[in-house]
Length: 334
Length: 107
Image (cartoon, rainbow over all chains, first blue to last red):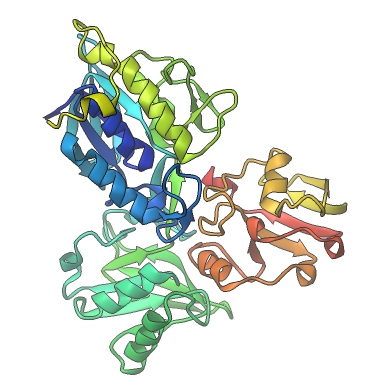
């Protein structure tokens, strides 16, 4: 069990900056994010895009903003649980909470901050018959441990960068790699695309274009996969694994079941302190909504500062909070 | 002002009056009419949550750029009629455009 003062769900820019605001008030933070990296949308959707409305950082590239935020909060030594999705929130007798993830990690905290943006990024699932039936029994939506595919027969599907990159990488690991793509050409990185065509020509992989995986078969575990081409011809091939790679899309997920006020897939808060209708649970950044809400990173930063002042009373109920400027006091690292 | 017919996930059709002179892209217009689309990336053409299927009038649309095609390629259910609403700028010659919302299941 991890113990901390504040558990922040979501390690995007607002969740990261919240660590700084908490740290100024001597409150420790632990962040959980479903993505394997910090930065949220900035890392997943637009790492190379310039952002023009961050005060004092004109035109900063999204991934640089994430790096800078990590430097800014380093002294407050936040904990990170990445690549795990928050599933459960359990209130304790003393008012504190235990936050649990899909991988069994538990974080005991006095305050919960939801900074989950648009929700957790989850893999897009193609319309394939019996796909969900074989999840964990041969169907994988991401490659976490490439070694598990050593000397196996695998089928990948998709036409983007990750489908190309994993096809190239796994060609040397798996006994047979088949890539199924709806289109005739690839629009991912040209280098990766030409490498995939080279591998196919050399007979190192099977490339099946203008086709889609239509159904899966097997008794208990995945054994075979049926592929439909654009002339409606069906081919069935044997496989141990199927890895559809169609990017990620955000889902609100279990947050919707926590009895919080929800309006149009956002958590309603009061603007006095960005608290939700449940004591000790706050929501900041794109995940919250209130009259006049603007989904801007800079507004999320503001919300983080106000919110942490309010959370102080749950972490240090005996103490009186006195506001201090960093220019006067500097910052006191943990 | 042009007319655009939109079919939602329930198959209900509605014809919208869409202004061509106030700088809104089609995703923004759909949101203004309170269609339930996420438009996660806010119109950068990167998230594919404003995926639409063009039913009629595709020939009048501004063509897909590489960025839009890349993003469409990440969708499991895209086909040759797929576009991202955020990449379409309504213009007078698009009158009569007809489309179906495809990204609703993401909401």
